[in-house]
Image (cartoon, rainbow, N blue to C red; front, side, top):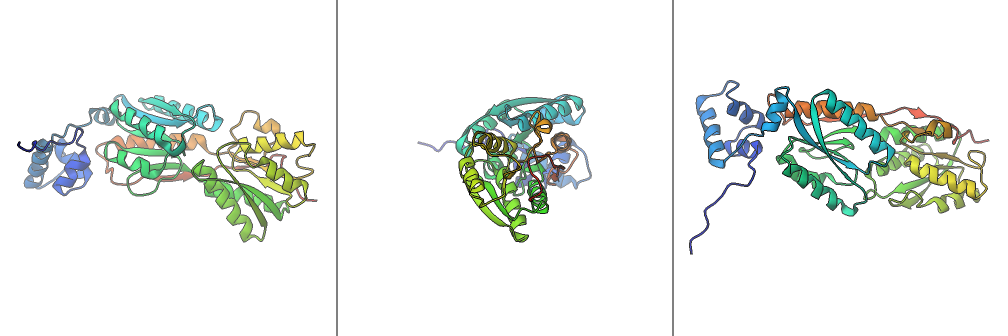
Length: 342
């Protein structure tokens, strides 16, 4: 029996060609387009390797770079969440304005991110020119294998490593801003609902920033571990407030803040007379009427810059080796659920 002949991978990327030729992706791209100034032997080597590997240019990306319609895959967390729903609307508006088509997949509960990884694979099967990932439920390590196929940007969450781009909310600033506000109101014993990073990494980052800021200011912080459920930890928080052990409860989302407010009402406790409560997001409909103390995340800025960054990455005249790392902080909404400690 003879060995089967070596075959190139099903989808050879420009990164494969560049690596085999010992040049950057930008150099390989320009050489294949007949642009730029290169030694003739360099161009010939790149062309030869491209042909030998069976590289086929991504025509969707080329069309987008030329100003024509392109298609990008969007993986979105549960759109019923107002923060993700607004992000979807803003991304769609920006894409339409720029002549970019979005193919969207929405994933709800997904332990470990396996469903989301499968969704990304389906989007790649549609030959999309790039991927936008607007969910905190999939890790950077899970995203990295896709980065050799198409440009990939996290929208709303920081990325790590040198392959995945990000246009993020500055959750550390948001957590610190809320903690500084609670401290300025005179609270020195505070409970914080501490979200497990596997349940929501953005909430985890907010909570970590809250705790660090409060503890550095000498505040006694009582963490309450919670998972994905918005009502988790609420009974424990109310018990601490009822016993006078804390004067404020800080929540890493407005959904959790509402759960605390409902439970306080049912228990006959008054907010903020008996204890103060804060959240984060600022997107819930009627949040202003409810007087929620929160931070309004900058959804519009993140959507605008995400689409602009994707266009830049899909422009084959640009050096896609340059990582996009941008973050935006939103303003404090003082509200009425947190008050000066008397």
